[in-house]
Length: 369
Image 1 (cartoon, rainbow, N blue to C red):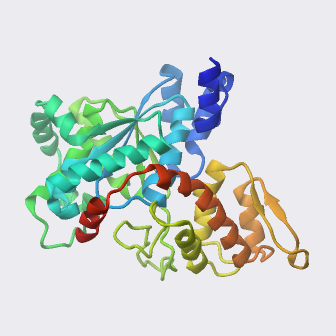
Image 2: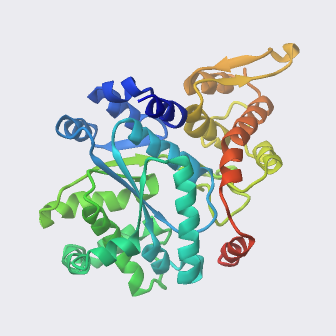
Image 3: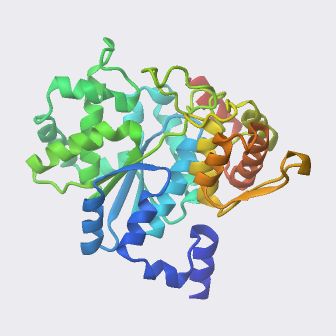
């Protein structure tokens, strides 16, 4: 009991008694907290916990390059919220989806090696989550492919094309090969074969979960609750997003768009220092987004050190308080950036030191972009 209690305190942030004393509202609140943007629906999640204290969760990840703040840390911290709520969490590494989407050059050997790198990383951040490879799931379930065909009978070509945005493709792209048309249906059928009660993803995957909610009842399959978290914006200014411009998330393919797990401490601080963070502007501010989604997920308080002539030291116990001071220009971007950079180093440095990435594999990933 003492060993388990220490483990829960160190890695999950709960003591042994609290873990088993959470009521349904507390569990739902844990799942709903930032960076969660929506639950479809909150009422269904509440009902689920009334009948199942340990439901099955899933999040699927394409194997597509170096891990960064969004793909590993923000996602991993959100997975840990589910774990705190007593949910059985599965991280699905979609190696076949990676092939279909031409990631990592479509090279199976590279994909297999990068899959191991992803497994090692998530074991560090989410030690209680189960990790499943797509290729293993399909090998163990030969009937998967017949059910996939049956599922696609409920999908029109037009609807399929509309869902291609989940894989970073446009429905107007005239060079879409037939294999990519299988991707949305496979993602949906994965959810069924993993026996999922709660389907979790970033907001960019919302369309597939809506497809699941529409078609699963026709297949007489269990319909999961959907939970979608906010995507971390890239470090550059979001141009014309409010007037219909495209939102630019932190990307594995652009080393200047985000903070990567293998960046040095100095690189992390320099990237944050260069990040767009105009004084008083909170909309699509990447530094504030990192504070909300990552720093406050790890720490109960953010302490900002500054000279007395500039207001002296200040502490924030919640994100809204920090955001409001920044909006009112009581907190300068320079002080915010320096603080967030230091906290990120504290979070990333121990992971980077334990996560092995050979020079050979690093070069293979770089060549695939």
